[in-house]
Length: 388
Image 1: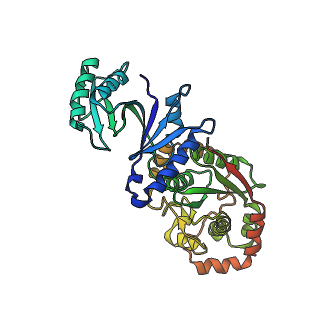
Image 2: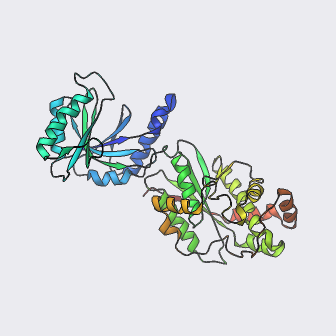
């Protein structure tokens, strides 16, 4: 008896009250997208769970890998479906542990829908005894080498012994669209990932300094974006030419203000792009005090010219915390590959660490701000990023 069911558990969605149905439907849609369009997948909702029926000819473990990155999923189990009787559950449990090497085990039983003539404790005792006889392993309820899960519904039961951890959070698209400023560095991909985990569909915006630098940063940003969107709905990546605008800033304002003006123009351009794609906020990877442009006064001066909220998911993290999270989600290796970053292009030696909107507004008077923003917008390129 091999597993034919992917039993998907979610966490936070269960707390959504009257809106839970909307979140569940979004999660089901995203699971279908991650599974791929080559088959008409049998995905259905049960009480507090989602079930994927895997037909013959499909590798259930490969399918589990496809959907493990879908936000909203707490864990995925490769399960056997059985009748909701102690005898059938016992048979399925004994069968599912065959060939597995383990010295200790525990039975974890749940009955989301009540009404059976037996309790969860009855399942633990009877099924545990059968597994112990079949395997020779000892029972360890505290730190078992293998956990056998049993979920009993009114019409069916599911038994499993293998689970894959999901990312949790909310399904992408359930919280609206945000415009994510994505560089090729370590921080911004982590910030985008965190907002996606909160259910936001990202509109990726990447600034590059071509023709003064190579296309390496554009290619790297595309690689990172494709990685972030694994198993998610399709998104868009907009690349913005920033080199000519930077040249105007370099030749028109004192050197110490360059970085701050780069940032303010990025926010102006991102605001325009966000409005055109119905995004409700901007997202950046800034963390308080990490570099000169990220002091509290400078962050306030950057945000001052934004027409919409500027979200900074990493604001209270230090660099090592961000690096650790980048490694955990898998973007770190890509991020540390060398590339020409538009913000390091024409970097001043002593950037200002304290600024006010009034100071920067005065400096910007020497620039034709509206014309520069329009020129950058006219040169934008947009492409769809499909789920891998």
